[in-house]
Image (tube, rainbow over all chains, first blue to last red; front, top):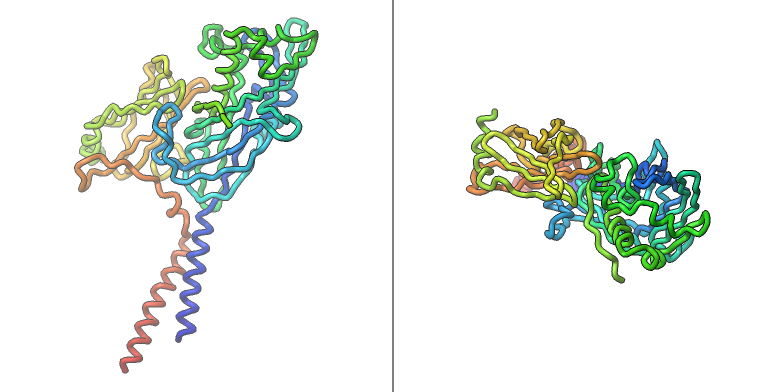
Length: 263
Length: 157
């Protein structure tokens, strides 16, 4: 009789263990530079911009279950129920295509639930291809027969803290045994502006555009780092550049809070 | 059904017009009246998200749209949650690459005098144990009780 009881107890424990494991799912974190990066676009000042690579080094990429939901526009600190952090990773935002517009940052097993907040840091990489830089933008800009091969090296380190993903689909809802996605989105239209929008559109009024950068080119080549940009751009243009990078990080269409990383 | 909801919403009305600024650039306020939940979305500049796309998610189905619609020229939209679906109603508002998600807690006023903020929709547990597993666990527990009773009854004899 004792053997029977023990067997039943063991079966019960096994079932409970299985149920706990089945309450896990997978969360994939992705990075997305949107069509601006993958397909190119025309800046607010008429420069056709095509990127060959756009490297960004991501660190402390953390997904949260926050309750209540976190508002990046509020001073109220995030109330974290659970969180999971991925290892640092360098991604090339140009690598996405029409079928898979986002590039993978990593994935991790997580307890099922709604991951309604995401944060990450953009920090200086320790290894090639962008050693010492947090972001490197490489490509070609063209306007009225003029062509400039550009490389913008950014060692400005920023931390973005965001609420829930806002887009066509709902992201971050992990069901038991299923995989869900979250996305760190980068809005480069905030940096260069967009020709398709009116000049007085708020985005275009605040964007730097490409013309101030083109003015720093030597012949057909522009290779500059953050320090050079700070010293050679006008204060107004550098302020626009700095503000654009602070506003670069999004979760889909949802904006994020940004802070300068101080190590 | 709506009449059942009125007293619940009536309580909520006392804390109506709770601001919920969700993100840089877009702020969404909600107001619960005796008739429905009203949403108003504006940019930081105060300009309304005119004709913005609005998607409503019920508390028990966070990935399936319960209702879709379009805000009016003032960025306003309203909906009426069923009385039997308490919890966090989630409202997504989008326009021209900008947007925000708003949580609207709707709770029962059954025994409590005040507003109850709805808790998580319970994804963790509701999907954690399937029917087969639940049956096996029930069998194990009930079987244990039965066998224990058999043991004790046999000792008494």
